[in-house]
Image (cartoon, rainbow, N blue to C red; front, side, top):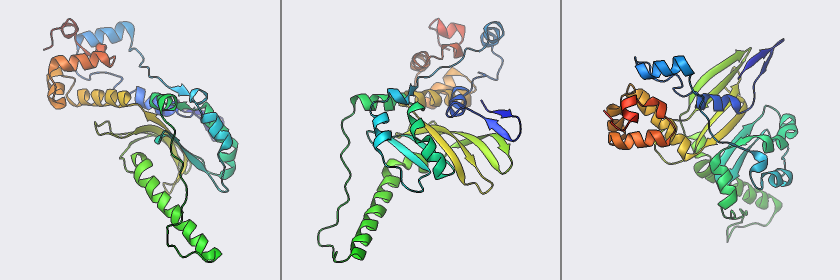
Length: 277
């Protein structure tokens, strides 16, 4: 998805780079000799994987929010939430860049979960700053100090509760391109069964490792389970019995999960006929 252009320029489609990384998970299939797989790959090629995503204009309320939300002086990015779920993070190198591209969020891709939340989720309670009872506010300096205390409290709550899935998760980074002092990466989350949001995305960092661009896409729980299933199969050398043992499942149940995930092509012919081995 990343292509060099004439001169010192690089072209890539936002989020498509990250989605490509997810869709290509173990796309080549087993690395071991497998007659059925080899014959299928040679005759028909590898079938492309597909996942659902939604344009921002179809996420109810997002367009109105972008028109109403205030852009603060010096703002270089934003975190988009739907029903208290982090939908996406977007960071640019300069406030002028962000001001120009703020409205483009309605043209971005969003996951199935966020689309459902905006359709079926209830209203989110309003957040209001409150001066604690008994606080001694007599001057403008006292009021300013109380306001800053509320800002710190909100920031700590935000980092601990709402952004934890991005800030406290160990992501696997794949370097896509390097140009001068800048490096383009895409990243994938750990595909574990722990609850919590999982994001894929892409970022550009400078020579100090500081982020100059960031865009993320929240995976649905089903997409995380599919990633976990692929990783488990790969770690088990694509052997059904080993993978079932690693998942604490029977082979029959694992076959059912594989079919439900749309990975029938990973099953040998005798398994597809209902005789796991």
